[in-house]
Length: 494
Ligand SMILES: Nc1ncnc2c1ncn2[C@@H]1O[C@H](COP(=O)(O)OP(=O)(O)OP(=O)(O)O)[C@@H](O)[C@H]1O
Ligand SMILES: [Mg+2]
Image (cartoon, rainbow, N blue to C red; front, side):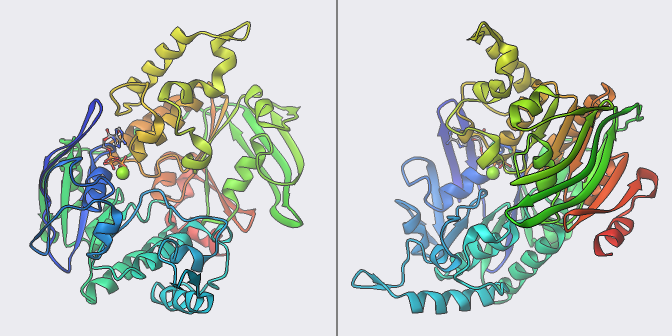
């Protein structure tokens, strides 16, 4: 890609970017949130057609002027987007061949669809029935279905935009191994990732982008995490986690004998736990261990069909039957699934931030728009949300910046208990540090923090105490001093 420049109204997303990828290599693309990584890959794959950017794309020495995705796919360039795009109500097989149906004379050949789907699933190491609905499988497997779908298109260059962001360590490892095996077969891939340890493990070269410009391309031999970080943020970052001396007070939230059913299935089994003021409490566990379901069920019963157990706040039993009651009682839950539950993508930043705070912003049911603008502007600066204006639709923000809006809206709600579910997913290293600092501040103000994370270093770096969950119940509890990756894993596998 030569001298690529791409502008959106008010934003120069790419400014004379150059990217050279050798055939057969795994090339990583790194950079802060909003640096322009996804945009560059959308240019390459024809999502933004020729004419909407300037500069040239050369693929196997031919100049390409793609009109749409079909154009790039016909040459074997296939992109898997940052936010997965599978349709939950359709089966695995249907999703794989969506838009590329195995049909003759307009009639879909279902046998062939299923047989071919099964072959592709085998290639990506997924032993799932092709007729299973997407909604029935977890994100890790969905990511593999996306790859199977890409393989069905005879791919030469596979582009993966943060493929492991939503995966646990084992799933991520499997995916990276898969990429390495594709490389052996001669496939080229470009991978965008904020997980620098993965990047430095599998990438043959790494291109770093900052503020829409190419900074440098590093070869595998010269790569270290510190070097990438320096390129990304333009300075050294010595600590990944800010220092903090915890000041822990009385118990602020206690959950007793918590049980959650979804239909007849017991999802949460007899959980008792507590959080103290000023304390950051982690929940470790593999995906599917019930961490999200637990937090959501506590947050105004937003998950589960039948819930039993008691909640105590500051020692007094509270009744929290819906989300407004949860907010009223000082609870907040920052979702891991920002696209579906966290944001209204067609609304602007300001309105997304004010949404859970309308009561605070209104008098006699009239919204004070001046204050709304002022507060949104305040959070834009405090959280360093990269956008020309708080009037920007959140759907137009880069993934990491969307996450910052979700965090802002709940921090602005000034909760007493803040439950954060994978709060730094898809967030770059520099911004992570900023978010950790904010979490620490909230704890120091005497709030109780619950931190759900699949990144063990994050839990170990941030938490005062860690619960380990598996299969819907708590298997162990560790004080910060005793917590290590090994001690956590021991409880997970016990
Ligand atoms: N459709 C759009 N309309 C307006 N601005 C956009 C649009 N898409 C992207 N941008 C802006 O372009 C810039 C680059 O965004 P991009 O999504 O490429 O970042 P990114 O490097 O992928 O970041 P992240 O790591 O957070 O995913 C950002 O400032 C973003 O807000
Ligand atoms: Mg992106």
